[in-house]
Length: 93
Image (cartoon, rainbow, N blue to C red):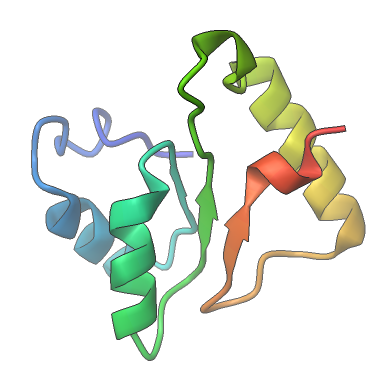
């Protein structure tokens, strides 16, 4: 796994993160899915996006543990395919 910080992209705009993810064939995991949903819709090809939506009530937000569990639940239902946009909140059980 490569974080935006590891890639030297912390503080860069979303487009730079999107382009790096696509260029390297990496699935993008984001807590800012709204912006990346627009890139997804405009793209004919990308490795996939896993989005985590935040709630107005911080107590309802997914923790890192919740995200890992959601990824494991998602994996049980099949891999993220190219050009998929998956909302991890739906796999939080």
